[in-house]
Amino acid sequence: MQSYSIIDVDTHITEVADLWTSRVPARFRDAVPRIEIDASGKQWWWLGSNRLLPIGLTATAGAGDFKHAPKTYADMHPGAFDARARLSYMDDMGIWAMVLYPNVGGFGAQEFLRLGDPELMLTCVQVYNDWQTEWASAAPERLLPIISLPFWDVPAAVREIRRCAAMGHRGILFTGEPQSFGQPILGDHHWDPLWEVAVELDLPISFHIGSGNMEGGLRRDKLKAYGRMAAFAERSVDLFMDNGRQLCDLLMSGVLARYPTIKFVSVESGIGWVPFVLEALDYQFQGNRVVEDRPEFDRLPSAYFARNVYACYWFEQTAPRRLLDKVGIDNILFETDFPHPTSLYGTEVQARIDGGLGDCDAESRYKILWGNAQKLYKVAAPPQ
Image (cartoon, rainbow, N blue to C red; front, side, top):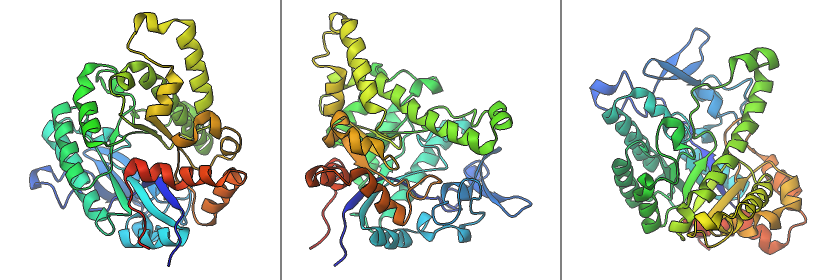
């Protein structure tokens, strides 16, 4: 009997080439995401007239890195895009379940805004959600889809949540900074129908890094001055800190006070920054006597975090050794980010776990690697 000890709360599926072109009406096929091959033989994703990213950039684990990404699907680890191969890899790693996130549509489905046509934008989101459901059907108890949203249309987003929840999706993907797309801020009552359906269906809401407006990409001046890889490293950590800003916004928005049972997850952003943000926000909250203006706040920001928010880590070694109690054992989840460029892969998975949690007591280790995620995503235990 295979032994499993991990529920991995952040992984990605490398979308197959005909995901959208084979599923949309003929009139949309030239606009939806598609693959084109450049002169060097590298395959690229295009959306309308916009070139997005090379296909291999989302699937470097075991097959390359950000600098030398696979050029074709044949060059990738097959678990990047094939569900059966993914399950085999999970078995090798002792990973029972993986939570699944997208690539091409953006980490908040924001890339589809480039299309400008509401019907086409919604179609692209729905096609992706349907395909993800099909992909996960290889083992729906182990492969856990997250609902991409047409967040620019709240009624449509609510309908899509209900539709996908009925198909077995385990959470909701949302942008942590809707205002960067000209939408209302998190605390605006505009979003209440979204929060209400999440509470009704008991689905956690994910703020994945990179879910805000990424139009600029890597700054050209930094690419020139720093070099491509240094600029990428700097931008990656910027994205972690962006989630810190989004967490501050969420904690002060009033959403958690209005919806006491709602759950949010800060995905792929680490945990080491969390204690500072919570301590600083509590200090400012008390010093500025926020409750005099906002009497609905019945606890400190850190207490809302403890009740309503989770954070995920993968590579960190310092925070798991020193800061677990400051983040909160019940609020920490483990991820590998497979198969992305800085994901944990192969023997590194266990090495990073042991390096960070080697001195951790058994109960806390169990919660971080398994128990918290099992409860949050309603994961059925492996058969005995």
